[in-house]
Length: 408
Image 1 (tube, rainbow, N blue to C red):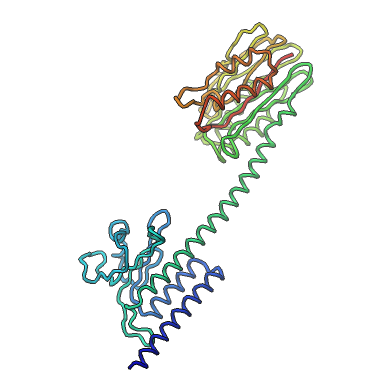
Image 2 (tube, rainbow, N blue to C red):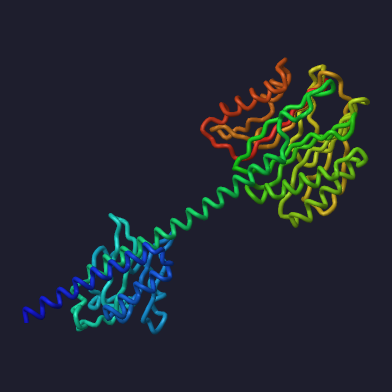
């Protein structure tokens, strides 16, 4: 008998070593999650003679990743948090009065330190298998095997998630570079005997939903635009990219601002199905006549400072683009620009930024720095510095864009 017992123990030890080696090789060969679970199921059911197997694993929520040998779906009523989470060690549950677990013999919890990783339920255990019986005495092997499998599956999930995130990150970087190319570089903006234009852009995410532009329409006319799409992230950036392409295609000397606004509204409405809208400020400036025509389509009103230090907010216009199928009324504002006047356009990420007391930044600092003798560039820089101090530890909540003009 001693010889037979020693032989069985040797066989079982060899079986365990071979099994762990095979599982390790399967993991190293990058076997799929489904393949690992099939391998695991074969070991438990065919090699070790277990009739019923249920394996629960945690991935943001508890879920059943393997069920085998179950003839009905009563196991779906098991709720890990209520029925299994209190088990801290291998437990024979045949004598326990838990109806949901009645068809199983053993629960095997798998922990990493104090955190539960998995729960294994076994039922219909054969105890007299040649060479490896009795299985019931070797449940710690099941625990070790399950730990290896569950950790391998989790590592695969994390790796795949990392690969996916890396792919998304690269796509976002590409999208960010493409969007940066769509927004004029501040160095490319007009700086001549008629006007000096400066700008600032800070997306909330890698890509944003703000846009500004300055277009030379002919030798005497310039077009200006600043816009902000509702929402943030990729969808906002795609909508704004389409808007930019449409604006540049339509904004010519011949088109009136009224017609431009009407056509852009239709395009935004078609592209967004009314689910998003864009606030826009459009303007045309003629350097010979010094006439400045504009439409404010629901945007933060630009601050205009005349050469006589009189401040005016440019509000005339219409509703934002994409809010209505047809804009009911469009009002075109007109200014005669005198030399030395300044115009400051921005998006709401600047003026609506709150401090730690939930008070908005507002326009007072903008007015103060516009009235100073600083250059437009320095005024923008100082306003942004004041904003950073003002917000304190609060994070930025939106994109910030600034387009500032000094008329010469």
